[in-house]
Image 1 (cartoon, rainbow, N blue to C red):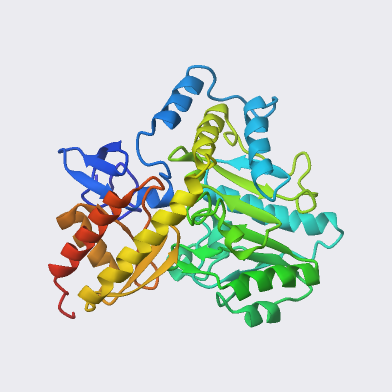
Image 2 (cartoon, rainbow, N blue to C red):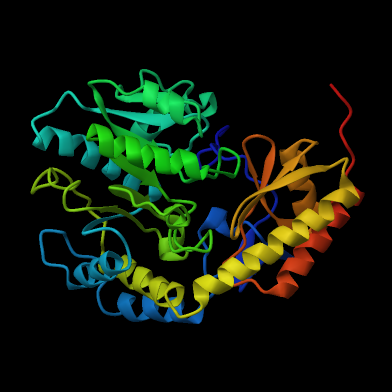
Length: 396
């Protein structure tokens, strides 16, 4: 048989984890890796967190799944906690970030439909964005690597340059429903929105009767040092997609919305077989317990600042490899002067450091939110060692 049992859509590397301990992964031969990828910003509490494990074990022994035809005391309780901690009035639980963004798109369109303006169905989106791998979410980006071979894509999206408020304003017409944007682009290159841009989108939405939809799947849930990244900008969205860190490794996502924005999402308009299952709710509650502990987010801010300082201090020592640092909190990116994917592989294979490549030739540094000074020092030491013995490939 020529094809592998696992459909070969991932360029899987040689790391084969079988166990995790805090900020480390252990492979099947016992090799240890400092995990500054965290499942691509998923393992917010690191690996084998006792509180998360306990909550999952307890719920698994009690009730794992029932249909959403029935009442959900578990979902109601978790949703209320999220409502109390955010801008939102209501929550729809999903199994992934892509599903959360899909729900956000549907919520935005349905709002205008309920308002008697069904022609307002187009979301203005931004270049180099990543919103997921469904047909709807790849239609919202302009990245060929996600779109090629899947045409025809869905209509209803108009892509303009990121951090270009004038271009966003110029794109508004009678069919515009709102804006869909990542406050910090993750896969696209770890690029934060400028304050003028994100605040400007909020103002344009208010002025034109549009909705501001935020994709905080990667940058939310404490990753930047605030509970959600938009808090750094002093604005609130109408709708927000959340996932990754919300479950700490358990598959979970959510679409949060204001009562006004969600007015079209009535009985029968949306659903999910597994979304909001009791086991996922237990995991989500456990993660939220830790994230909202007094001082937790402040510590993320402190360690994020320390990590950035350490990276910036390292760069002048290896100017042939590193260019600059970007990002917020513990969502940092290092722009390289050499091929980022080759360097990520070099760090992984030769120095036991796990990072993630991103667009714009950036290496993503996404550690668990529980790191301390020793992990930062170890990371920088491995980055420096990797830079010293990295061999720049000869041009083809």
